[in-house]
Length: 496
Ligand code: ADP
Image (cartoon, rainbow, N blue to C red):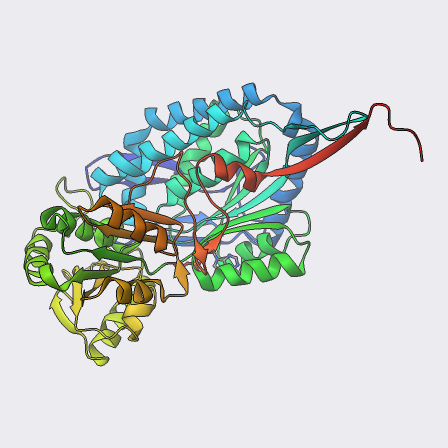
């Protein structure tokens, strides 16, 4: 089964549409397919095979077989590293096509997919390729009569469930550290955006990765996703998505085989602009902080707090900046914001905008559908919103900003930290001591000082509180994918 995709830049690409198990594309066990929709016009792009629990089971069996007989510690870190670096190169060689698929499927601007999502994914594979032969234990001195050491062993079969906001990049964040540490994976893509991973699957064999090491299935959460979370022979599950589903994954892991679980979940990140900030820079970063990827970032800076002394000027300049955001066809070169990913997301965001109005918020700009077809929403700013209002507390996952004024820094810190979430935060100030003290007081896994939405493969990312468990990226992510074994060796300890 294959489909030819037509892109808005006049080019096209043919992809395989089956489930990628044991190095082969194949139909689902129940023979079902589902439609993938172009969010820019609401029309079907193609049909892809749908994975059921049976297919997850088949993929897990293959993965286990592969892990036990052909992978894990049987392949050296050096060899695994080479494969990951080759994958990075292949991604780069196919970057135009991958970016076009991503743009068509997700709705993000082609220019952004081409300059950010795809190269960053390649950078992730290269970065973890570098780690593959550098993951090792320690020797630990105990007493003269004994010698102890640790081994960082792979966990085994890893189930990975990813979202639709950065389909290709989230796949890279998941697969690269798992392979670097010698694991095998069964990855489920989001039902809204399975296409770029299917193109990636074609590169796996070319990179020399043995069949069965990376298995990719597309399907729905309550069926294929739940089958991963509940599976008795999956040793670890890594999930990125909503906090609601994250709780279900953790429950399923607990009530099945207590598989190791890492979660990267929602956020409602505060972005604090102090009186002494460089206003023009803060305006530009704040606009980028909420609107990048159409607000569909778990770390989106959706609560902007501006100190009273500069509030009026900030608001005026932010409004002007908003007028320059290009919303439209993802394949147009100057587009910054494309459509939201789906009708469901569009409806959810419009309902949140409505709730903001009901709760007395004033719309400074936006608040409406953009255009006549597809799931486009105008970049929206609310002012005059009470801290207890739904739009000030709940994740919206769209281009909707709540802009608030504050006077006192100490009072503001209480409000900034008064959230169930703790994924990210930012502070803008020219006073470096104040900025750093604020960064340390914010309860968040990432704090940006005088910038926003900065991510690097070697810097950890993850949440405090209900924003998640564990860290992705960097050296820290390696520990998600290894079991530590302590070995005690008796040198001269007398028998008891
Ligand atoms: P959203 O609501 O933004 O679509 P989700 O958290 O529902 O975000 O989806 C993220 C990923 O989790 C997707 O791959 C989806 O299929 C999957 N998913 C959804 N529900 C479940 C579930 N009950 N068990 C496992 N995975 C799920």
